[in-house]
Image 1 (cartoon, rainbow, N blue to C red):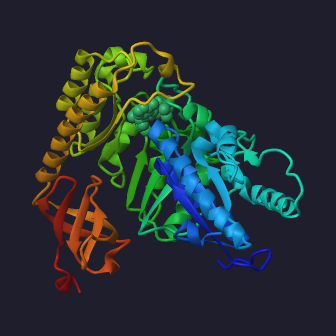
Image 2: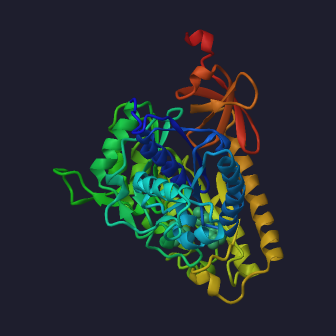
Image 3: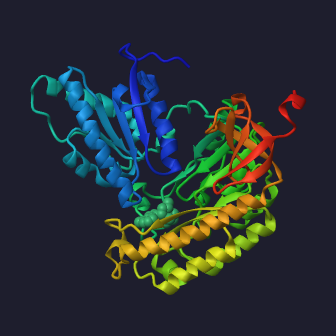
Length: 473
Ligand code: 5AD
Ligand code: SF4
């Protein structure tokens, strides 16, 4: 689609994304919102008229990165103004939501602060920022402190976003659910992303069809609590007024040309029977599940307000593997939650040993202001957290290596995503989300080919296309 910028000028936007896949999705959608205003994507802040930092607030380190980046952008902006032009700086995402006022105070160079539920209003916010710029240039006093939009608006942003833009290398994210009502005691998400919301199934199916028509062969359904999904059923569909995730997955699997379906991030409490059954029945649903457990100690799980114990998690894994024996699991772990004893930590190590994970994300507990965990007594010393994280990551790395090694010799479908590190290589993903590289042409990118896995490394596998490309031609 060609666009006609309202003022006839082509502008550039640089979007930097921090954090989770929801943010990656939101960044793409912000680009979609900005495109009709004349903004093309830029690779660097130096060449941009507008910079958007799409931020993450989940751990302290993630938020601090934002402030140091803003310091650098302030200098770029000052330089621009000396040259008689300008740079507009917008902070989006969860730091914007949580610390909007503070950002404006700490870094006055910021023009726009917009929360994750309000970015469909970027055009209005930019117009407002432009108006403020004109007032400033005229040497008059600016009213208030910048342009701030961190309300949770009564309307859903999904009803106000344009059709999604391009699909990268055959794969696309599709946000189906947002927010969270679970209130784990360590987590800021219920405060930054707001209450649980599920998009109506029909609008998801429409977006999915558009993405497949634009070249997607894989869709990853996103949500902070994606398997809590309970969206309005399409009108006329049998079986109740809402659809669960299992029902939605089955409907998506009917889209011609869609070869792979994934979803993330799920909660153990929301794995219902139908979704578990879908893992055994829907061939497009990939045999890989990210199911965060956080800890293997019942005492800590209780203090985290996770709403389940170790045994429920173990039973879930057993039931899933009964349906889909080759299912690979990944998870999230937090070490050093307040009150975590050596015995609690050992229970986590034991759970990891018992279950076996193909991949994992693990973190030291980070004390987040405003969450109940931050006020708990018995915060764990940094040195203890460091030692526990190292032990846990060593175990998980061993499991990942073993998982990869066990696949050597198998022939598997790989969806190619990008050029490999060395010239002549292409890199893709196996059904179990392993990185696989082969010798092959860049034309493979965006398509699925059969690969025989020949060699396993710590976090990737080498393979060769079968049958050889010449023979296939
Ligand atoms: N400290 C450390 N890790 C956290 N996570 C969420 N909040 C915190 C915190 N305060 C981790 C959890 C979650 C993942 C997205 O980030 O493991 O599943
Ligand atoms: Fe955060 Fe817990 Fe909700 Fe996940 S389930 S987003 S960890 S509050």
